Image (cartoon, rainbow, N blue to C red):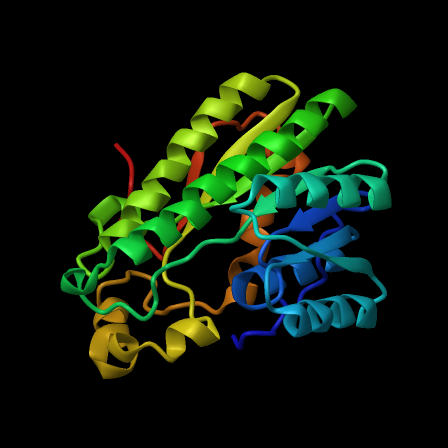
Length: 266
């Protein structure tokens, strides 16, 4: 399945009449989540930090399928930016039903723990932990006032095995679990907060990574029971599941989809 492929079978309309904000939706996985939400009936706010052209492309794709979308810019690691973004989204929509916290930095250019720098540690933790927490805090607070809402934080199965390549990334994704569980308790029962953790997804960024081009892809596929690495469109609907009515009794949960690579659980 290619990056922009959607399922052949008719899609469910799980978000008919609902509003969805996806952070980091200008490219990669975030773009596919935003487009999938629109396919399922949602009005979508497409967040970006610097990839304005990518965000415009995502909005165009949504409008091509008859959806409604607009872009919103913010650096999620800056509280005032997050406040401004929340005000803009709630002003445009009137309310917000779903927040998908997709933004995260994976330190993609780092190939070894030996290459860790203080600058990279600061940046990854600021984006992945501080940024996620600010978004959950600000948007979740407003969802409490409106009386409903669902938040999905995009985590990673890197927390299971760690990352010898980028320890700061594994640490940041582990921190997201703490954010999820804390706010799931704080916001209950009005707003649900969960983590969705995909395994490897073949985004354009991953496909260009040096280790991916030099044998790591084949190694991981050989260790994955389902025998393949999916593209981002295939897992977009899975992330959105946690925001649907079918997941109404789930909060503070960690849901993973990695083709069986880790087989997490008792």
